[in-house]
Length: 325
Image (cartoon, rainbow, N blue to C red):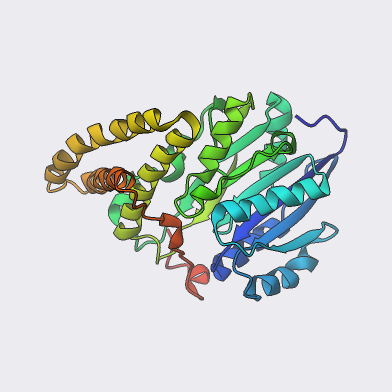
């Protein structure tokens, strides 16, 4: 953990073809409170380079006050490539910490202060917070049962983990200065963050999960569908197997595939029958069928590349109070 009296923090966001959501994201960051004795800067990584993101960033610069705002273009498409651009910028600037959120998320004013407070309190190298989904009213009823991002496990004591997600995290730059980075093999499948932090944990990095620094993920109407949830579960199963293969080897990848396959082959047909009685079981049916297909895709070497799909909010969607719960 950095020990300098005044900490330097780089807050980074990657974005690709989601200008409306990104605009809300950057607006929330502009109102961010800075931790005491800290120097906070921001970097926004454009993974499409169309000029629209540059325009949004330039129009927002004044609202960040004295904080330095950087705009970077990552020409090679892929979530791992874009996240690595943030890490490289942090190394270039020699910051002590790098904090990351996604372009469809908004933060509370005290988000960064809370992350830093937890880092100091527990001497953590990585601090991960919860992400709470903001759902549109049009979302399928079963979404309320799905526990997206594990948000229902909030309000618990901070706990040490083997991995983390990059949608709400602060990382000591010391853990990646020697070459640790997000693996491009996960560019379009997802799971790049789990893989990154799992490797860090194996190297002795201390990863803390806390409920003191929540952020909200805006789920647009175009994303809150049965089809999206199904594809997410397919991609999630694929990523879990790939992570096992890349961190432990092919044998353990096979074990992970079996761990996913065995319960799903049992639960899928049972939940299909129970779905006729209650909508709660619909998400179990979709989840376990998706996992079975994910296993099959890995076995046949035909991954779904879940992150090739991009979902943005419609122009007036985010300002309409009748759309979101």
